[in-house]
Length: 247
Image (cartoon, rainbow, N blue to C red; front, side, top):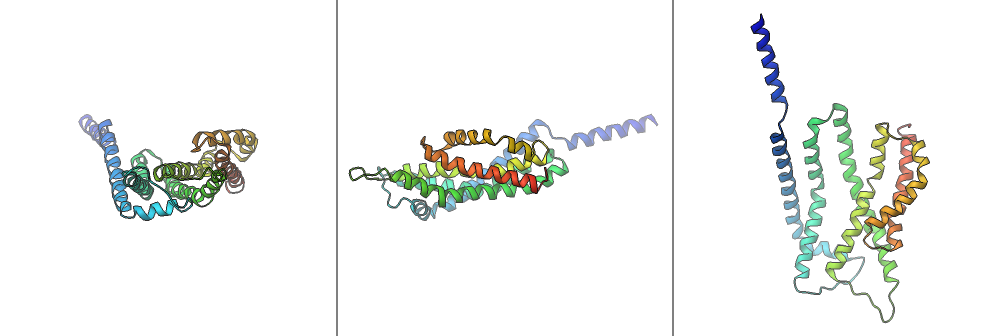
């Protein structure tokens, strides 16, 4: 009887060891997910390169005619645009690989929640980029171009303009994740609508501080362009927490 019990205990230990991953296994799994993500970005960036000229024309539309200051600037700009577009196109794959890596450690409820969070985060990120391109970027360019005079005429360098646009678009993608972040905290019971309302003044200051940190230029206009949408999204989050989550 004792031998039978000992065999059952050994079987239980073996099965538990099979179900658990060692540190090496975790590192190998992480390596696999990173490689898949890099391959996805590489493929989408390569495909984007064939449309680099159209992408540059699309990005340059708000500014008009651009100039390049050295022979290699156009080539490297095309590479940068291709990588940027490729990263955006591969973002769902990258986030899925991240989710696939951490999902074994999640509970059933957390897994169900992640099925909603990951697609929502992608949609909100792209919504922020689209908002920035069609609304914030043109307004920013008009503001800066307003300083032009008869003796000071704008002449945008292709590479510098592209860097400005990317640094202008990406912050809005992350800012638009704010409602999702707040809803998750509210769903977990960490915060509620009353708490959010009480922190409005603090959020007002933080919005402009964050705007100063992540804006591509140090002027108050760029900071405001980031802070105002953040404040509006915060108010939307309060509404959703109060009336959708009832907290």
